[in-house]
Image (spheres, rainbow, N blue to C red):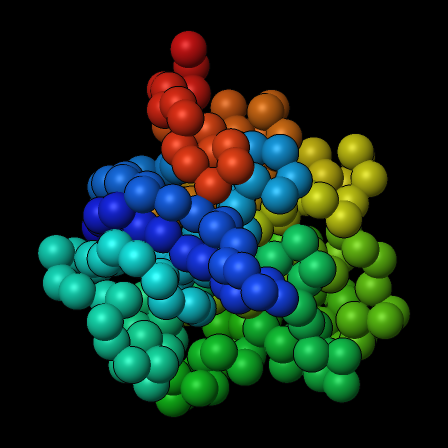
Length: 227
């Protein structure tokens, strides 16, 4: 599904470049659950952004389904993301002026799906928030906001779902509920969906099939999650 070859990323900092990722190779198969584990500052979120085409590497190449992806311009990458990718972020990223229902409807409407409202209502019901459909994000708890974000991500039936520290802003109890919901919905999607999860939580990472250990911008280990 996704292949990185010699992936590297640098940013200019004052008079010298800062290397965030270096010489990184990986392969992610269709339908896999892969966790990217590492301490803060290891480059996890940068790697996620590169894999999703939100940014482009300064070195190496990224392939999607065997075709060059990182060479595409932003419009072409955005088109792929709109059709094939879902996102769940630590900070929820809900639009504050929209209701829960409207937040879930938005990506469906951008895809010109005729029954966007009905689909969004069904997804809010699946995450246990049908009674909160008319509430705006400021009227929802953190756990509820993340459940709306999960509904929005799954509603478009993405081929690849990227989750960046999805429980990082939640307390332990809500984090556990959100993690259970995320993996339950991913289970229901079966082999149709690839999950790439960024976290520093080893218990959360262990629920994936593979764990990639990232330290100081390099992959230092790769293990099956049950080892």
